[in-house]
Length: 461
Image (cartoon, rainbow, N blue to C red):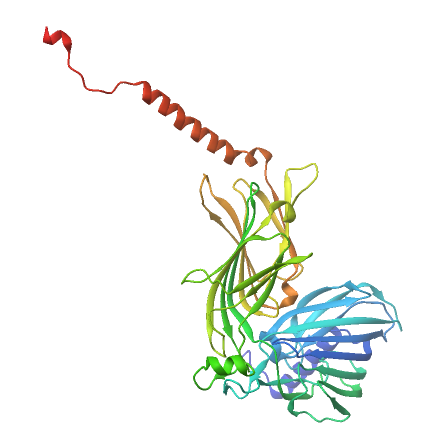
């Protein structure tokens, strides 16, 4: 066949590809040191690697490459890189590492000169990385999970020295990798320092430990943000909530729940709503749920949500949350133009939850045009639709943003820019005035028309 390749030829092709890849990811960089901190106190992993990057070549380097292990591709929530407290541009590469690693290209704010070193921080967020073990447990048993990762930071470059620190929510560690040097003190484990680690090297880090985190997972979130220039910004949120921890082995006992530890279950979540939020409503298909508390602070409105029953592993709850924020707090006009900017947060206001799939709909007033948005992270899918409500003729434009694997990191502000003529601002009230005026005019005319059926007096004569 014209497309067949002999074994030696295939080996040469593989070697050529590896060399080309090594050049592509920057062979003229090396890592002097890595201080890696893995935070496993919640239900998601937050990893921060502080690297001292050195240019060992003869030409300035404009960027570097960071890598994520291939088995973590479906768990990536976000990737953020900073240097000197400045956020750097990060783009996912079409290339992959020799072991299938996911590669990201990082652009330096200014070129790295030969023999110059610079401190760079790479922050990774991962969801769905814990395995409840045992998968089924009694109501009051401690919640145990397994974690699998790498002691070494996955890097396309030679790492001269590295230390890895792991932070847990408790000091109860059932088992852990004992690669020396290794120190376990309370809820913290330290591995290293290790020296001269080749590029793309990994070493298994396995932990089995007790966690006190709430495994509150929102499998699907639909968030509607409706802008009304005559009222406020109305938030309508629908949650499909599931406890993704170990499942309950026996029947639920309310008495034991009140007097003993709660194991893998949770019975409340807290949310920080925007300051001056009002009209807060919490309900499900049955109706209003009164087991909630609202407390105002100087910076936000604290909303504590209690479901109708505690949620154990595998248990689910579907509910809705509604609230309104004054328009002047979130929407600003652009001076000298007919444009406005909506500035609000993207993800759920509930703390320490993971969102598997999120759909955020921004409903803008009828007559809006030139709609743009700016987000501090990548959005998977962007579409538009039209929503018709009262007093609408053509309908209101809706911007639909969809993404997945959300953590607390995604509770950041994003901006919606749009044009809205001032005359459209008065159209709704004008329709109401004209409607009432027409109705009263009709009633006045109707009251003066004699519609009675009478007898013709001329015929009677």
